Every structure is written in C-alpha cells, then in structure tokens.
Length: 143
Image 1 (cartoon, rainbow, N blue to C red):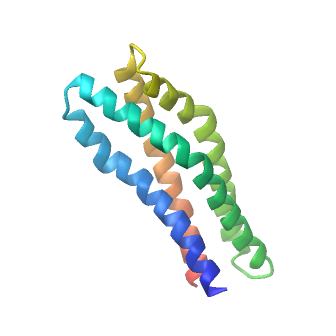
Image 2 (image 1 turned 120 degrees about the horizontal axis):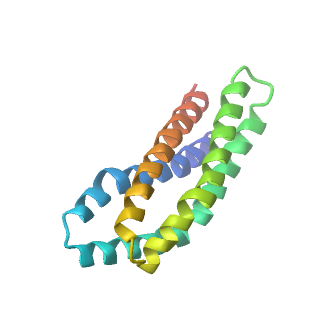
C-alpha cells in the first residue's frame, strides 16, 4: 500500500509541478524573447506537452480513483471524492478549453499572442484547481 501511495503522489504532484513550472517559469522566460522566437518556443512546448499530457492526466485520474476506492470505508472518502471530482473537471476543461488554444499556438496562427494570453489566464485557473486536488490527495494519503 505504501508503494502505491508514493507512486500516486509522485505522478499527481509531478504533473502539478510541471503545470506550475510552465506558468511560473517557462512562460515568463518566453515573454522576454523576440516574438518569432517566443512563438517557436511556445509552439514546440505545446507539441511536446500535447503528447505527454493526454497520457499523464488519465493516469493521474486513475490513480486518484483507485486511492478513493481503496479508502472507500474510511472517513477520508469525502475528501478523496472531492479530489476526484475536481480532477475530472480539470481534465474535461483542459480538453475542451485549453487544448484547442494550445493547438492554435502550435500551428502559429496570426493572432497567437492574444491566444497565448487567454491560454495563460485559463491555465492559472487550472493550476489553482490542481493545487487544491494535490493538497486534498496528499492530506488524505499521508494521514
């Protein structure tokens, strides 16, 4: 059980860390580049993360769901169900709200700077929701 707890926390918390890093470090660094270089960097990042995240998010959701199932008869079930619900909402919102914007960035559309600003604002909301989920999961698994 301990190994599974560690694996779950590792997968979920590293995903949160990557998303946070993109917002806190990568995007501010990209904004300092010339527009052509910025677009090139952002489009490559969108392509790379576009390949990894469709696997990482469902694995995280699955592991979180298994944690809930394993603790179904414990007082922490409500906390884990809340974490599961937030994770599902984040995943659905990512697919329908953020992925289309990232795809347009990867293509380098003419209005890419406006799209990037919209994506960054929405991504910050996703990061806040991921933080809540990560905290709830960590609290219940470590407890």
